[in-house]
Image 1 (cartoon, rainbow, N blue to C red):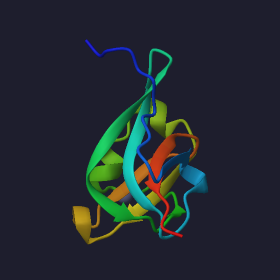
Image 2: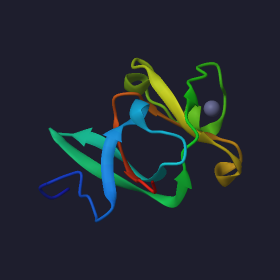
Image 3: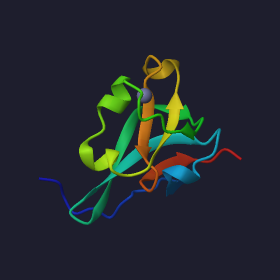
Length: 104
Ligand SMILES: [Zn+2]
């Protein structure tokens, strides 16, 4: 059972923004999911610098395969596709909140 959420929990220096508002160079520290009306924070094991690109729905990478039908039904963006996960995309719904550390 997941406890009451007062989320997303932001730490100093972090901000939550829509995935389609993430800019190149933003340090992505966590994604979020909506669950029972709460926004829960899903920590990334590795922080990465975003390099947003348009979605590529035909992509067969692990990241794209991990999308569920609900995600696929929404516009998505690719926030990163690089060596961190063997060139697998970090693809997220465009209106999902992601937690970033802004360096500028
Ligand atoms: Zn992909």
